[in-house]
Length: 64
Image 1 (cartoon, rainbow, N blue to C red):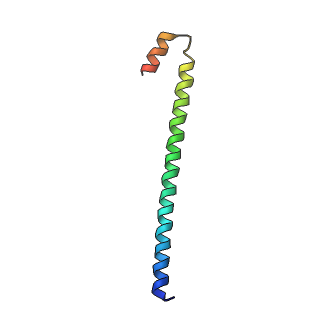
Image 2 (tube, rainbow, N blue to C red):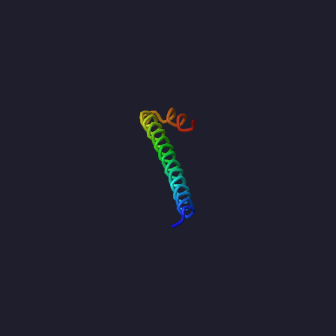
Image 3 (tube, rainbow, N blue to C red):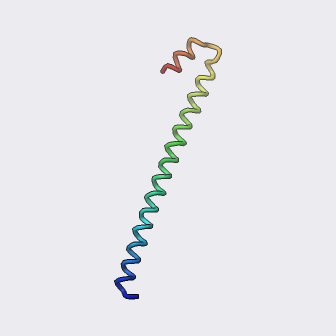
């Protein structure tokens, strides 16, 4: 193959690699965001469950 063909092939592979790296980075960020949201939900449930014996206070906390 000619040198130009090799350069073109390398550039195409580099472009694919960069696209894959970007997609991976986005997936990792989505995973972190999801884990953070889940942690917040678990914390909210834990805090509200402590108020299960006090319905009025529980209603106030859920409304917040």
